[in-house]
Image (cartoon, rainbow, N blue to C red):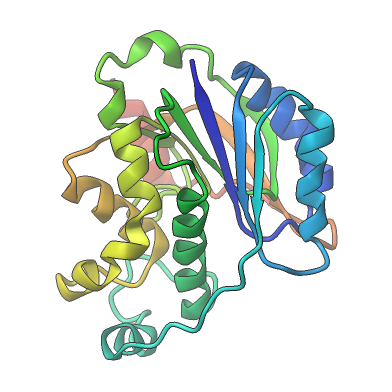
Length: 241
C-alpha cells in the first residue's frame, strides 16, 4: 500500500514517542512518506528524527506559524463553546481552532497530484501501548470512503488523535477547518471530536470507530494522559460487528 503518514501538532515529546510509533504503527507501512506540520518552537527540530529513522522516505516538514483567526461566528462559539458540547473541552477553544488549522496545513503540504492508498493521521506525542493493524489491507473493500478511528476517546464524536483513512475520508478529515463556519452555523459545537465526525458524515464517509489501538499522550514533563475509556465506549465496542 502506498501510504502517507501525516503528523501534526507540537513535537514536545516526539523523540520519546517515535520508537513506540514505529513499532506499533509505522513499520506496518513500509515505504511510507511522512508529512509534518508543527509549531515553529524549540521542539520543532525533533521532526528531523524521521529523516534519520527512515532514510529512504520522502519527509516534508512545515513549521508555518498559525495566523490569527477572527470572525464573529467563531468568536461567538469560543465564548459559548462549553454550553452545548457533549463533553467538557480539555483545552482552550482557541487551541481547538489551532488543531484544526494545523490539520489543514499538514494536508496542504502533500503534492497536488498525491494518490496514496492510505492516509494516517497521527499526533507526535502519542505513546503507543498496543495496536492491531495488519488486518486493514483486506477488511475494507470501499477503502476510499473509510475512516478507521479508535473505539475509545470519542467524547460524542470520533477520537481526534489518530486515524487510518482512505483518500475521500482523509480529504474531509484534514479539511474540517475549511468547513468550520458551515458546521458551526448548523449547530455543531466548537468541540474537536464533534467537528471531525460532522465533517466526515457531511461527506457521506463511513466511520468505523472500532480501531483496536491503545496509546497515551506524553507531555513534555514526562506525564502521561492515559486512554480515556468510558462505559459507553465499552458498550459501543461490544455491540459493534
